[in-house]
Length: 467
Image (cartoon, rainbow, N blue to C red; front, side, top):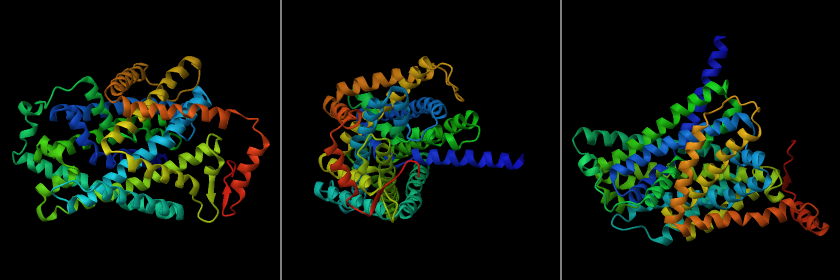
């Protein structure tokens, strides 16, 4: 029994650290400026960070129920396809492939280039061309790495994870030292809620969208439900420990920023952590841009790895062209899927601005979260007798959906072009689905053209689902 208990304990802590590590990413070095800009004051921005973690906890509990009720890999895509059918599942996949992953990759790549270049341009923003060129080189290099070897990609991920942890620990410790020395004017209640201008509900909604970019990854918890021993006990435990821990880290990081920077300085900075380091670390200020660059570099690698696998999974299910389900015969890497992700990312980073892109991708992210959690309520009604190892109180998904509806409604009102464009791109998937997936009796010449394209290159082969 002691041996079994040890295994259970190890699996629990492994999943706990994995889920915490997946949520804590490079977004914390990107989003603080956008949250403060839309919230309008230091105090309200800190409230947004704390409440954002609470919303993620509600969503994680709903996803935990879905994860053990529908034990399939693929996350939102698998759940929605199972509950609502192929069209809705395809639209989520379509938006992820065309919007969510490429846009997230573009934002992280631009952050990487800004943090690398900012020390060379201390008194101004790095040139537009320079940031885009360096971001493109980074995307191309990591695409080549992921195409060449799975082992290289995973080793890069392991090594560069240290960067984000080093940067966050350094920021929080230095910030606490500053507070202990009495440098916390911006955090005093009398000044923390001094608004530059009174924020509207729409602006607060956009502040939540900015914060949600840093919290993205909370739904990773449901991906490990099949490997968790006693998920009914251990999965909620992991949720209630990991997400509050991440919330604490994010809130303390923002408090640390405000211990040494005025709101005006933070808003004027193009690389907040670099400005923080220059003010407090003196001759060791070079540590901060290097740490953040390592973090974002690893983040790009991780998103390339996972986004290409989503394309691969969708192609195996017949929802994307079979070409994307092909892997290299020698390297065993999904090269076509990686190239699609690379091309889409480079296109987006050349036309978008970082904080607008965050609103854009966060809106679509929340849209997919809401549809998935609505599926939980629908499944409760249609299949009430289905075995549910985890069954959350109905108030949890209902509360989440109320917040979801308010957030998306006011975000769309405040940023109709940015948010509306994402919805339009998602809806373009409807005719694609009916022509490419639903239409089964296509003319033979279409299959012949596709077949000749797929099998014309002998270095690829189609990965069989039964393999």
